[in-house]
Amino acid sequence: MDRLACGDVGFGKTEIATRAIFCAVSAGKQAMVLAPTIALAKQHFDVISEHFSKYPKIRVGLLSRFQSKAEKEEYLHMIKHGYLDIIVATHSLLGSRVVYNNLGLLVVDEEQVCFLSSMLFRTFNVSDYPPR
Image 1 (cartoon, rainbow, N blue to C red):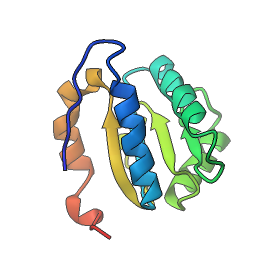
Image 2: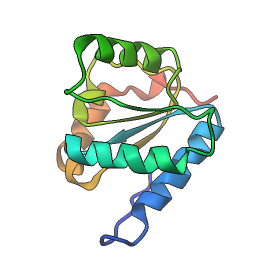
Image 3: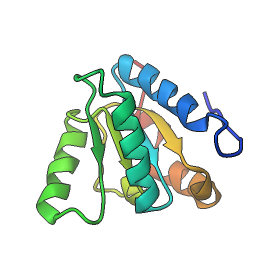
């Protein structure tokens, strides 16, 4: 199921995304949030972390180029083994080094849509993520 939320600032796009993330994570899936810049990724991380602060079992992570190599490796391990439910980052999440445990939802911020469609189809093979 593909959906596109369009609207001006303050129209509730982030709220829609947050509710979709909650549904995906509640179903045992991981959710990935892509932002066009690190600053916006941090903003999304802060908003999502605040929304899910009432749910201590839901773990949110921010992958950033400002992390040390050891921190990045730890995050990649946590993503691969399902220790993170929600991962927020820039297009670095599309790299071949990132292996997901049970990816169920991809939220893409507006500015990346232009180049992402072809990259996503090359990066994610539908058969890699069968329905459960």
